[in-house]
Image (cartoon, rainbow, N blue to C red; front, side, top):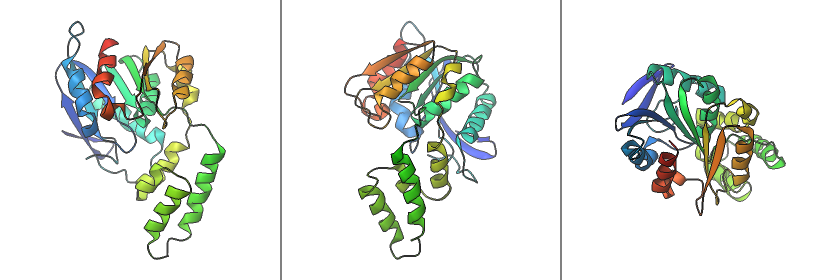
Length: 253
């Protein structure tokens, strides 16, 4: 399905009928990667009824349109605010994974009266400034100087692979690349204490993208929260343990 939000074509998928449940995917992902989880949640728990699960492609990902200029977190939050209004979501459940979790945590403050429960799954809310990140920014600027050399893209990939080891930056182009730099520079942890709605934090104990210590930090900051640890799970719970993730969600709806 498609809808125009803030001038951008937005693709979204809907599963089931019942109480509204909005899922926000992470950076570099899309709604297709959440089908297994969405279908399971749509079935609902025997005692809790069924759900209408809505999974949009964030702008720049999946089949949604690319932003016309580089976005920061607030641009995505404004887009999400309009999506909630356009879809007339009231008394809904909200789940955000990774970058989607960061967006969910921020919109939860703005739409506290409309959200029944918040689920933060490996949420990238904590963006600590480190020497490694500072180095990453400096090296990215230096690399741009060599744009004119033959096979520049291969050169750039090699630098990120062998010097910086791993970064989503190397896999994106143009506006999304600049958007990525804006997004990773914003620490959203300061607003966590303002979340007043019941919050379930779900994390894998083998998550090396958003470390488990971030999950415990969020739990301490959000007053009405509890954390659930999935043993042996990494960052991509939706792809590796979709049934377990959906089960934990339904148990806490």
